[in-house]
Length: 301
Image (cartoon, rainbow, N blue to C red):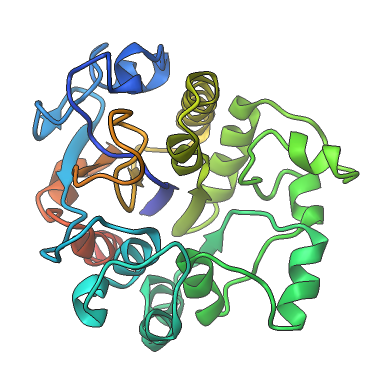
């Protein structure tokens, strides 16, 4: 059994309103095909099709205020209600209290201790490792969890050889900064991710441009990001062996799905399950705090 978790920052379930929800007008043929051609919205609730299951997942966690990245990600990867633990939603980066929660135990550390093969698929450029050595690297809560578990950060060599994926997917930004890496399509990046996931019990890829596009509020950027997301998913689905394994996508908070407001939303986030035993794991997920326990239970079966 294997799980590939693709984390899309800032993707909530919006209203069935083309004027405010860019997902309604985005073609996204791969994602729509999972749900019989429909685009799931906040109006649908739990959505089960022949190919996938969508679970609206609470990101507020019973704490007043707008959900934020650091507490949301900490909750996803530990199973601990992080905003309740520190008394607020916090982001974008983890403060000392959140870093302590992540260091105390997270899904990566627990799966490594259980002797599961674990991979963090994101590739980091050389300057990241220079800053890391000087304790100056700015890392997401996800990356702090990875580091706390001693899971390897992938580098430019991994990216060049297709053993990692850039957060910018096609490698174009790397090349613009002089890196000797191939320019690839988002579909190829998805296939590379699937190949890596087929060799590990638990694989994570972190994508933040969905949140970035939501904050910038530029329709052409949003359209480009959603097209990239869809092609990435296409490559993953083509390459991943889902007969006995599972693709799980989720997010930390809403943002991109509602252009009528600036910043984050209170909307639930879509946890999408594709592959083996998806209804079994779907029944366990209600909030972000349920994701890590559900994954660990799945890998024990």
